[in-house]
Image (tube, rainbow, N blue to C red; front, side, top):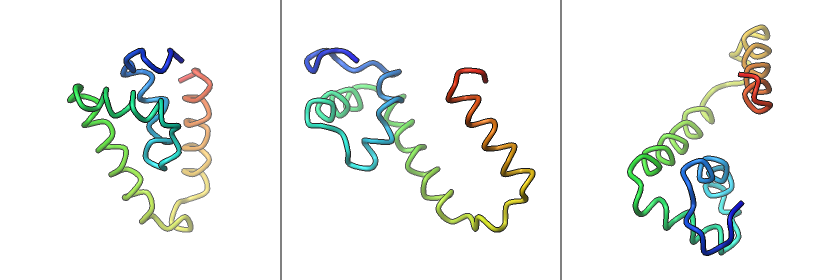
Length: 85
């Protein structure tokens, strides 16, 4: 990641959004994150979408997801995280 005084890029914001939403960003990263969000409409929308996804996903009953669908989703997430997707 860049130095604390370097403006945050959109890509870096995406990598930090989970920690931001959970309130876990260290002060220097938080300042950079909020500085970026203050001037980037795309990232404002991304953070809002991220929060909405968490809210909706929190309402899903894990028992209501078919095992094959769950396995497919987990595999897709693992592929996405590893850069295979």
